[in-house]
Length: 90
Image (cartoon, rainbow, N blue to C red; front, side):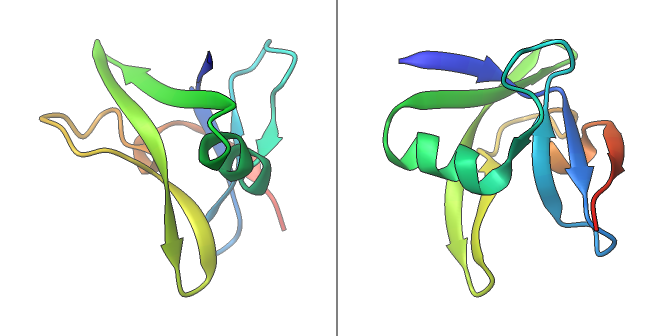
């Protein structure tokens, strides 16, 4: 299975992550829905590595649909919400 590192996010005006990114990579940016399908289908795994802390990314089903979340560990720097934002998607 391939792995992809997430380094940045795009968020909508409400702060919801809509796209993930790793600038310079051919697959980037990528819609969250596509990422969820990759993870659920065991096609590609995604992770965040910030300040030497790696966290795998999983899919969670919520009232508003599927969304991405990093698995809990000792660090908060590798949480998706704490990654640098590239822009706002409406």
